[in-house]
Length: 297
Image (cartoon, rainbow, N blue to C red; front, side, top):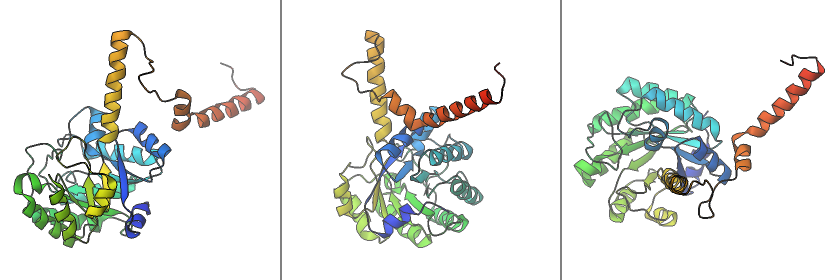
């Protein structure tokens, strides 16, 4: 059964802020801070794990394994980027089943041609509306938990086909059974408002720092009509900036610590990653081995 918290919060009409996680350290930090829903971002998980761009290079197997690890690392409900479903309708069916079994709560599918590209980069091409409608229907039917495992339908039509076509596609995707609509890369607050006013289905805002969409405060997004917002880039860009700054200091000054650079406490990080359980295990089994005359080799 999928984690029900996302469905529950949507039904309650709460506005949901969802940070992106690019690796397990980010997943641990979101757990420490107390987020109960996180976003497994395709762009940043691919960059973190493989050092490659979000251009359809990462495979289904690589991504489902990564999502499974995120789900095991945090207690939060996991919204997972699944690109185009990694192929045709049979692939979509397999992807939904695999992501759900991995512990994902909601799966995001997009209407780009394969291989897809990051929604805020050029040269995207979309499949036909009907092709995407069929993918959504297959996804909705494939899920085991039809109440709590949610389908997010994303359209990338704005860039090459215009806002009107994006609106038509979202209407078709809602009729096909999408639980949440994702209008990728609107370029103004006016476009964002137009989309939210047109649909009763929950709308997702993508607050991708450095992308084409205006970055607005959560209270403004809620007023516009969004039900939730993902922040896929924030933790990755902040982490990259901090790493670059500290590495330049190490290269130029030969030191790893400075009052100018914040550093997370190592002892607390050991706690977060689970070392106390390891230490307790080792104490117990070392004691048991001594008591029973175990090997000292």
